[in-house]
Length: 153
Length: 153
DNA sequence: CGGGCGGATCACACGGTCGTAGTTTCACGG
DNA sequence: CCGTGAAACTACGACCGTGTGATCCGCCCG
Image 1 (tube, rainbow over the protein chains, first blue to last red):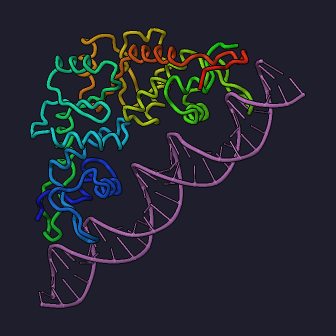
Image 2: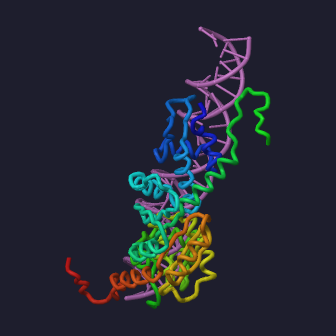
Image 3: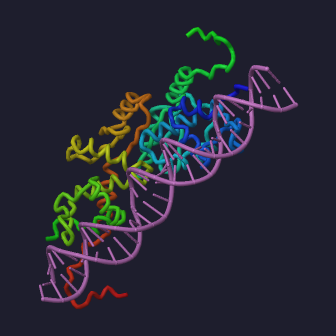
């Protein structure tokens, strides 16, 4: 069953610590959608989509956004984000979020939000690209048997 | 000497707690430029410009940006920010920051930063306006004079 | 010169992160 | 079908940053 990604691998791919992944799962920020933990020894299974969200979260965190804020944005986002993700830009303002498609729309949003405080801007398709690269880079665990899985380097 | 603003008043005007202001001063995020504390009993004196920075910080905080990040951005900004402030947008990316003047420039920045992560936008002139309003709203302490403080109840 | 404003200090809370040791389960080989 | 070992989830404690409240203390101003 190598559907999806193990917790460990997920963490490696998106570049966070395992403890972080664990904490986020426990505190309900994001839990593995293929298989959640049900006690010690069980295995979490993250979907590709999960990884994408994880990577977005990590990116927001790296940008200095508080986890608390990320939670709020995602709560909102989960209801409004379709499958598109590509060529879309995420704009977060405080606890809410919007998706924007092109520059004109961006300017529009910026102007509409005048005086509302800070806008956070993130290009989701870039995140996707980076995630794909990272997946490539982190080999699936070799089946514990085969003499030479012959992945030819 | 009612040059500038006392710590208490500064806090009230920008809408933070006095303890926060104190904490920020002691941890070197921002200290009063007119008169710093030099031991118990002394008085801090904040300039208008200080208030502006305080307000920007508060706005960033409200937007869910980590104080740590704010520290980094300000360290950078202090060297690069002239007196302008009006009709300028502050753009923060991770630890560094840029100032942008119009929509076209904004789009430019957005494109240049593709793949660099998250951008945070803040319209500084709005902050200034809000600060000015707030100052208006918070009267200078009445010279403690007349027998009738008589502000009724 | 005396009272009060406000800075100093200390203890504590809370969220997020991390390390380590413990425990459970899964998958494989026999 | 069972034993076994590694994978990986869990528990627990520690630490750091960011405050907060209480209380002490000293300077300044009227």
